[in-house]
Image (cartoon, rainbow, N blue to C red; front, side, top):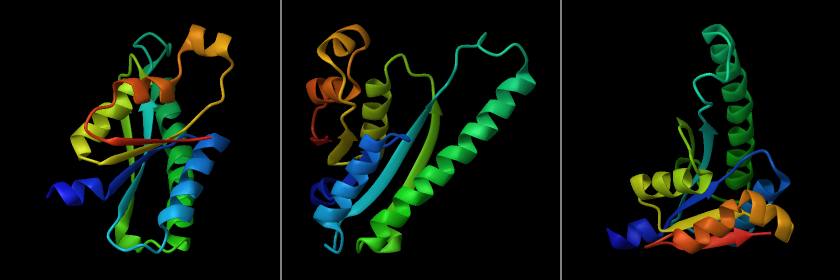
Length: 153
C-alpha cells in the first residue's frame, strides 16, 4: 500500500500561471509513465459569515465560483491526459473549506487523500510580500510531513 500512496500525486491549483506551470511540469515529467495517479485540487476558501449581506448573494457567488473552478480543473485534467496519463488515472477535486491558512487546508486534503507527492506553484512574492502575507508554498515546505513536495516556479 505504501508504494501506491507514493505514486499518488496531488497538485494544488488555482487560476494562476504558476499553477498552470505546476500542472504542465507534472505532465512533462510523468505523462505516459504508467502507475501514477494525479489529482488536481482546488480549495474554495469559505468566506466569513458576514461577508455577504444576504444568503442569496452568497449562493450566487458559490455557483459562479464553482463553475469557473470546474472549467479550470477540466482544462488542467485535459493537459494531463493529453500528456499521456490514462483518463482513469487523472481526477479533479473541488472542495469548500474554512481556511485560516490555505497551506493548512491543502495539507489537510493531502493527509485525508493519502498522496505521497504534493505539487504547488510558487507565487513569486517579494521578500516584503512574503513577510507580510506569508507564502503558501513556503509554509507547505516547512510543515509538510510524510510526503514529497515539489514547488514549481
